[in-house]
Amino acid sequence: MASSVQAEFQQAQQDVRTLPTQPSNDVLLKLYALYKQATQGDATGERPGGFNFVGAAKYDAWKALNGQSSETAQQEYVALVQQLRGR
Image (tube, rainbow, N blue to C red; front, side, top):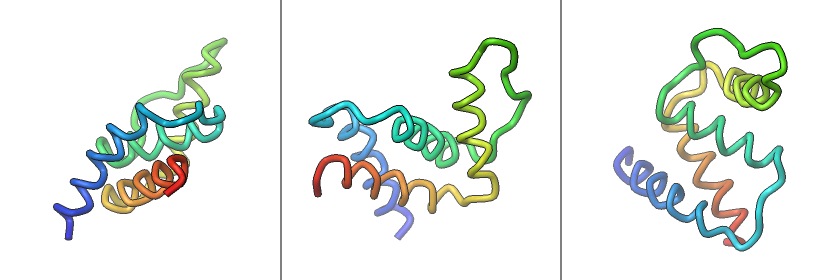
């Protein structure tokens, strides 16, 4: 089953580049966080500070997924991309 999830995840990474409309920033953050959790695991390092608002938002979104398995993150990423594509 894991290989099937990985194949769907890889396809979703390609599909996300050809979405019919640009997702909202909240959705983009969710996609980013799920991708990072799926490929790198829990967030590490220091939270960006100062005026790096984008970096801080990305870090916070990823950190919120700490403890989630890579496979679960892949499945959620695939489901979100399919939803955005209207499937």
